[in-house]
Each structure stands twice: as C-alpha cells, then as structure tokens.
Amino acid sequence: DAKTTQPPSMDCAEGRAANLPCNHSTISGNEYVYWYRQIHSQGPQYIIHGLKNNETNEMASLIITEDRKSSTLILPHATLRDTAVYYCIVIRASGGSNYKLTFGKGTLLTVNP
Amino acid sequence: GAGVSQTPSNKVTEKGKYVELRCDPISGHTALYWYRQSLGQGPEFLIYFQGTGAADDSGLPNDRFFAVRPEGSVSTLKIQRTERGDSAVYLCASSLTPPGHLNEKLFFGSGTQLSVL
Image (cartoon, rainbow over all chains, first blue to last red; front, side, top):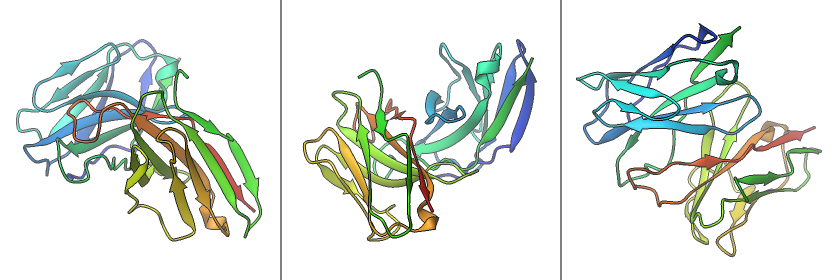
C-alpha cells in the first residue's frame, strides 16, 4: 500500500474550517484514500473515504487532487470536540491484505477556543 | 451493544504474568481485528479473524501472543510471560463487511491499557 505523509500537528480556531493535508504521491489506481481520527483515550473513528471524486458526508469533505497524489480533509466548522489525531490511510480496493490499516503517526489537530 | 466493548479498560500486571484481554464486537459483525498502540504511535495490526478462524496473524510479535474467537463473536487476546515492552493500548475493531468490500469501515473499541511493571 502507498505510504502517506502528514504534518505532525496543526491548529485551528473554533468555528473555522480545518484543512488537513495528506501526501500520497505513490498511490496506485486501485487504492482508496481513507481518513480516521482518534480522540484522546478513544479508539480510531472512521470519517470518510474516496477514490477519485470529492466526497462529502455529515462529518467532513474530502478533496482529492486530479493526479491523486494528495488530498485534503476539510472540517467545515471545527469545534473543540474535533481535537484529535487524524490519520490518512491508503488502502487497496480489494485483494491482498487490504484489511491491514497502516496508520502512521497522523496529524494532531488542536482546535482552540 | 451499541459499539465495540473491551474489558478491562486498564490492566496492570507484573513481568512474567499471564493476561487476557476481551473484546465484544458489534453484533452481527463477522470480521474482528486486534491492533496495538504504543505511546505516540499509530495503531499497529496484530491479527484478523473472519468468523471463528484467524485469517491473518502475521502481526503478532512472537509466540507469547495468541488470540481466539471460538464462537465467532467475542474474542480474547492472550499474552503469556508478559514483558515491560508489551505495555501499550490494545485496540479491538470489528466490521460488518468482509475485507475487500469497497465501503468497509472498521469500528474500534476504546482499548485496554496494559501496563507491565
């Protein structure tokens, strides 16, 4: 699976949009981009995933560049409860050992009042 | 239950002791996973069950670690002769769809913090 690169930490003001970048320059055509987050003392929580097109759900939006080498997770109106470590993970669509999520160290997003 | 339940939430043991960590997955989820998370690191894969069988145990660090899921629901992670380096948060996750499904999502429990003194 492709390796991802994320900044170790970011800050965001409460109520503002949080834009979390992820670089996955070696991604293959059949690999998806998944985002999970982990709030302190909890297990990781699924946020969103996508292949080529931008995706939006009730939690966030995912913007994937046309060449698919990078993506951005957008939390449109960050709240204090969004403070967490955010993990960008690339997973092959099927076959092999795609169930083995490789988390890396993620980005610690701190939302400030 | 509403989510993945792990017990105990905290376990303190002495070096050389045996421990068991329990995971109750979401009802109906056939796939179950164990991960281990050391301080400041992301979770690392240990073992994956599909039903009762361990489909992939390649992440288990050595033969002191063993996991079972006898009835295809509850799973127990067993660690023999614990060492201080085993101290970590042990996370369990389950999923409704089998791996490979495009919309597979893992649901994680809050983990068991294991401390080996």
